[in-house]
Length: 140
Image 1 (tube, rainbow, N blue to C red):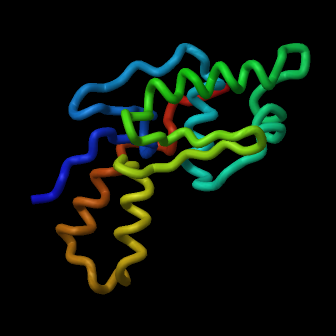
Image 2 (image 1 turned 120 degrees about the vertical axis):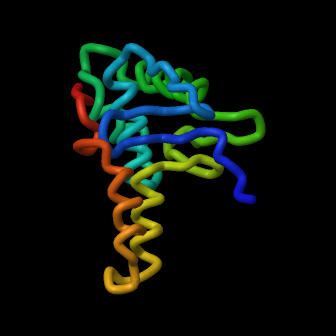
């Protein structure tokens, strides 16, 4: 029997995070939500300076804003013994270990074969993952 992931992240449609069946509340900051989406979708580490340039204006303290956002995101996506927000002095990334991310699952499934080998039922099941536009409603 397959182990059900502790956390599910949906980006195909409205941005949602679920623990089990319970939808989690995002931090109020739209920039914090956008930061998480960016880290998830790019799938690589980013320099802190670059993230500050992308998400925060200079009159604010961008590095402090980034630290604040990362602390809020950790409480949202990290689990005991499973850090998903990985940050050091220079870089920040998201590690999807133990999480189900709808877009990553669709990509992985499609990479496993050619369109000719998928049944109609399989393709219909994949299509149900698409609940709307990518990150529908997320603006900064």
